[in-house]
Image (tube, helix red, strand yellow):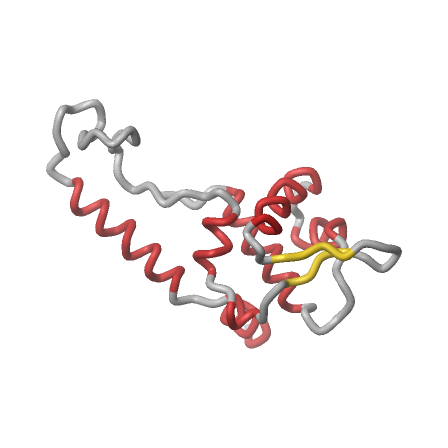
Length: 139
């Protein structure tokens, strides 16, 4: 499994917001520049994060974005899933039919890869945005 750019960029942008949580709202252009994320792509990601209730926009001359909750209350899994990233470690069809890689049944390694996917998601559920901010400061 590979984490796509949407999930990666969403975590970077949210970490940027969390590091500046005590300040005025942050411009999306500033985040894009600091994190080297294409602005148009980040705008698309922020639409999803805002719809998920993780960030809010502030209008006006000093407007921008800010977190809706404390960094300690935001799990990394929420960010990645809200950005539209999926954790797919199996080659199973997605239409509800129990089949792998075009087969009529599950492949021999299905449970191995499905278990890995659960472990990855559990790991991200147990990590908080505040963990990334504190790790960044100590590095």
